[in-house]
Amino acid sequence: MREGIVYGYPSGEIQPEAYAKRGEVFTLLWRLILTYRLKDFQSLTQDDIQRLKGLIATVEELSKRLQDQGQVLSAYSDAIKELRQALEKTQAEATTLAGEAGKKADEALVQLREWSERLSNLEAATYKGLRDFREEVNTLAGAIRDLDAKLKALEEAFTGKTGEASTRFAELQGALAQLEGVVSKAEEEIAEVRSFLARLDELSLRVGTLEEQVKALKEEVAKLREEMPKREVLSPFGLQVSLSGVSPFAGVMRVGYALPEGFGFYLRGAYDLGFYGAVGVVSVHQASLFTLTTTLGVGRGFYGPGFTYGELGVSFGGKLFGALGLGAEGVISFPMGTGPSVARFGVGVIYGW
Image 1: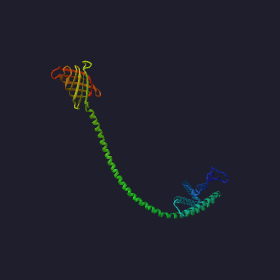
Image 2: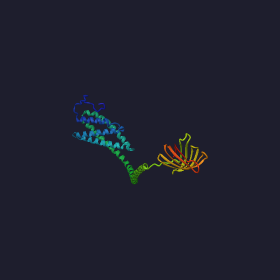
Image 3: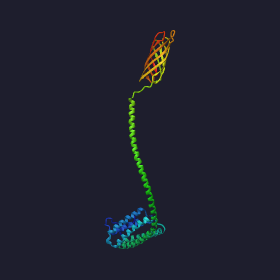
Image 4: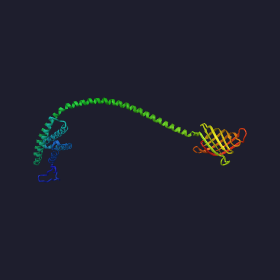
């Protein structure tokens, strides 16, 4: 009632419980069309057009049910179908028409506004009876035929644009032909890339196999290194200080230098009976933490009248912290000429060997 679709009976009653007659339903549907379609066509939206299509489809269904009403309603249904087709064509072509076509479209819109007023008057006449309403429908059918004539004129105006569209379509076909050539070339390049990728995958597989082999070799080398006996590196410098225990001031100090093979020279100084000095060669044998050192040299005792000696020494020691350790040493000095034989023994500190 707010939208002006339902007015009620002349007495003002609505009677929602009563059965609606076909003519009353037809009247309500036509008021829906008048309310939602006959707006200003310039403000129509896509939703309005879709809504019109739905209403037209409903009217077509009702028209089929009212075939017993005669040829007038059948002609009206055909006119509605033609109106639907004209509206669809108008929607598709209105955006591209120009010049004379635009003027004809404006004339069609003016004519449609006139029909809107006539249909509004037709709504008031529906209360007089279905016969009067049919007469108005006949008038509307004539107006629709007039609209069809104008739409045909619009189609003729639109036909002039067909030649230009054909030319553009031909240009598009030429561009597509060129594009096909480019695509074919691209497909060939893609095939080459795929072949290269296949080779790359094969190389990657080979590299992976080689990496696994290298990894296995590294593990085997590491295992062999662990199994190999460690070689102790001989320190080239050696120093040993030993106390003999004969008196608080009796002791021997030996310093020397040896090559990696274990051979070298040494200097020895001692104090027991008096001062004693010697020089000679040394041989060092190292096994893990233990060292065996032998010396052979010539010495001179500065006690008494002084004596010259040949000497032979042996030292055995072990390392405690780095190059620092403990050792025991024995030296026998035998005179080269006159003089007493002297034996020296002591325990002391070793640095190096």
